[in-house]
Image (cartoon, rainbow, N blue to C red):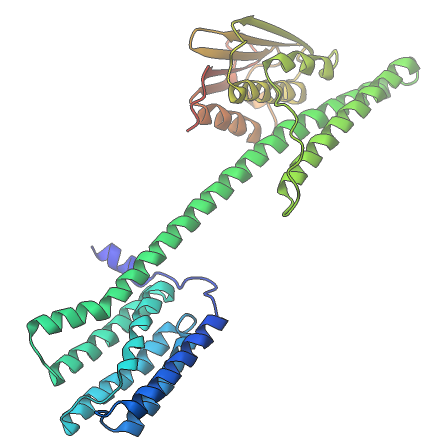
Length: 381
């Protein structure tokens, strides 16, 4: 209970509350006109000039009810308390029916103010209502109804604020998931292509003097990989740009495209791909995840597996799942691996989102093994 109270007390103000808009000026104009007409035409107004001036002046507090809710509540209900005390001397209530607009202030207080401001402001509101009831007591029922009428807008403001905050949190979660997905895509696609470019460039440098034709082949592969990288980057940028038209979406890569990865790596290490079992009716998300995990695993083996000569990629379609295994014959032990670890995190996230599992680590007989097991259907979590 104490933690909840402290949390409410420390609740910050709603960031960037809307300032005065044309509707606020229209509302104030109507209230000013209504106060003047009521003050002039209503025959039983006590202290007519004071009542008119008070209603007209306080109606302008609505212009700052969002940006300065506590100050407006303090000014308005302070004036209400003063008028209630003045009613003791006059014997009759002082004020106009137009003053009903003050119920908007508790709403604004709980909708836009901080927790501290809401607590203090509601205290002022309750005090004003209590003094008004004590001066003009008309019974228990009227007192309860009046209190509920005064505090109901505050409850509505708090409810609207909670719903808006919940929506903002949901939007933040959506943006976070989108950023994580983009990070995975950037890491998987760019890292793979850049690795292939670097390896081919190194190979071209080695054979440039003795085998010019092999160097030309390496340049061709570099050009192809660079073109793929540029195309995929343009697609991602097109999605991210605000107001841009939806880009043409290329078909998602799947299990059938894994063999193409082997051809893009080169001869060192040699990549062997084996596809077995039923792989025809995999869901698009499952096929794309298998492809990306295989791509990242091959990239890691090429970049970080010391003295590796072979990378074996096995994709097996089973009754209720599909199993991917990527194993290299590099030096054993995690210490032989470099990198930042983002690739393994991204692969694990892909598997988890589809209800699968991923394990990565040193093999008992040396090298490194990545094993991913994904359900055949789609079960996005």
